[in-house]
Image 1 (cartoon, rainbow, N blue to C red):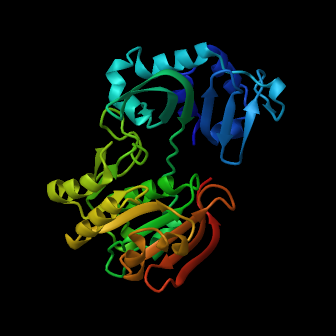
Image 2 (image 1 turned 180 degrees about the vertical axis):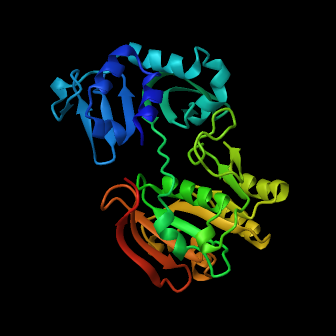
Length: 329
């Protein structure tokens, strides 16, 4: 991740926090994943190789008494910058608990919920912010591509299995970009790809426009429920590949199966460490047993985010590429 992406986020922060983060070592700033602001609690950062509280001087520390304590005004300033001083205009985003900003970065919010008729209407008195920096790494999927394409140059149905924070969305994004652009050396022409991006993490849309590179032949349904969105794309946009992130609900699995029957190629991810773990969940065992997913990619953080533990055949489970192999850096 380039320092320019950190600069995009720095503009949202109050001067005191900008000065602290500016003092951090370049390597940490380049690998930043999350900046967490909690009212009256220590400033907390997470990057590719670790996490720490931060002092006023921009040093890492394990001592609570040495940390910069986030003040209420810090959060208020950041929220005002996020919403351009209009919380009401972003009521739908607040209901979901996050806001996507220019550059594709996402900010999660927590505080007091306003509930009407059993449903969350909005948030107020925001006390915590989790700024998650979007990390696009074009080309990171390239070492895997020969295992993911059939002899006729058609992508297999691919499922990425990954625990949280192991780089699955970054890998998924680059697979989408690659298939959309085309892979001439593998005989893959550019394909029309439809993406259902329910939480704005794949394409990082800002006002409906992708901020992250998902390829020139890609159409994105942003903030759309996966079950409905997958079928909407198939019916309306004529994709050759449909992609989505973090599938799991039975309704989503049913939509994937219906999309499969229409002749499109499936590309998705799920929170799981192994096929065995996934089989124990409702609705997954038949899909794995039947070999609907022709290729499984298993990720971990063993060597850091984006560690590939294996690429496997979906039916018999034969290992095609053994890890660990780190893709993201």
